[in-house]
Length: 406
Image 1: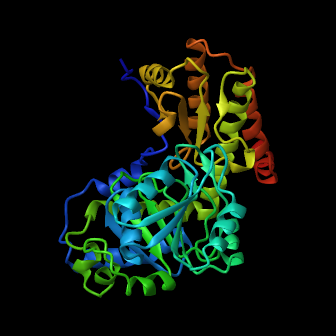
Image 2 (image 1 turned 180 degrees about the horizontal axis):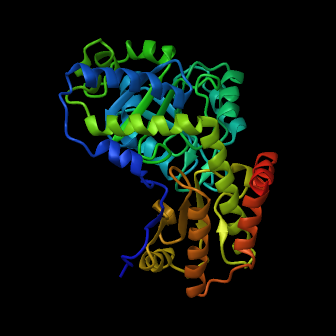
C-alpha cells in the first residue's frame, strides 16, 4: 500500500507534476467563451505560445493528447496514398508510423536499433534514393520517451537539404518542448507537434501543432478527410472555429499561467535547469551502472535526453516489481513501454522539478533497487551532489555568499 504521508514524488515522463500556480489558475468557474474577456485571453495565448516554439508561424491548439497532434499534422498536409518517411528511434516513431498507415498513407522507414539516435547520413541516403520525390514528409521524433534518445534536429534538416529533397520536415517535440533547446524557425522545421502534459507542466488534454508558411500553403492543396483538425477552418477568422467548437477554457487558463512561469524563468533558464538536472540524474545512474546490472538504454552519452532517462534492467529482474516497491513509499517512476515493458524503468526529469526533488528521488530509487538485490556501483548520491555543486559553483553564488557573510 502506498504511503499517504508527505508529498508524492512523481518522476514520470508524463504527465508531470502540475505547479500550484497552474492548478489555481484552472480552479475557477467556467466563463462565456464567446465573451470579450475570453477572446482577448485566447488572442494573447495564441500569440505568446509561439515564443515556446520560437516560431513566427501559426500554432493550432486542440482538445487532444499528443497522438491527436500527430493526426492533426498528418491530415492537414497529406493526401490519401501519399508517402511519408519515418526514421526509427523508439516506440513513438513506431506509433506515428502506425497512425500514418491507418490514415491510408504509405510509410517508409530508416531502420534503427532503438539504442542509438537517428542517423542523419542514413536519412540523407534514403531521401537521395527517392528520385521521383514520392516522399512528402519526414516524421522525426526529437525525444522518444520510451528509449530516452534525443536525435539531432539540425543534422536532420541538413540531411534533407543535402539530398535536395522538398519533403516537409515534421518534428515531434512532445517530450522536448520546454525542456530542450528547440528554435523551430532557425532549425528549418516546417511542422512541430507538442502536448501540454510534459515540459509545459499542465494536465493532459491540450495538443499543439505549429506550422510555418510552407506547411500552411501545402495544407490548402491536400485532400485528406478532416474536419476537427482542419487548419483552414481554424484560421478563417471566427473565434468559435479556433477550437472547432467549445473552447477548452480551463486548459487555456492553465496554459496562460504556464507561459507566465516560463517567461519569468526565461525559456533559456528553463532549458538550462533541465540540462543541469539531467546531468545530475545521469551522474547517479552512471554510478549505479558500474555494478554491472543496470544499463543506460541510450548508449551514446551525447544522445541522452534532458527530459527522461530510460534504464535497462538485468535479465530475470522485473522492472514492474521495482516500480511497485517505489509506489509503496510514494515514489512514482515511469514504466518501460512496448518491447521495454518489464525490462526497463524510466526516470522523468522534466517540467516543474528542482534539485531537492531530484536528489530525494534518486535516493529513494537507490533504496528500492537495493531492496531488490540489484547490484549497484557505489557513490551515486555523491556523484549527483558533486554534479549539482559544480553546476552552481559560479561567481553569482560566490557573490551571494560573500554578501550574506557581510
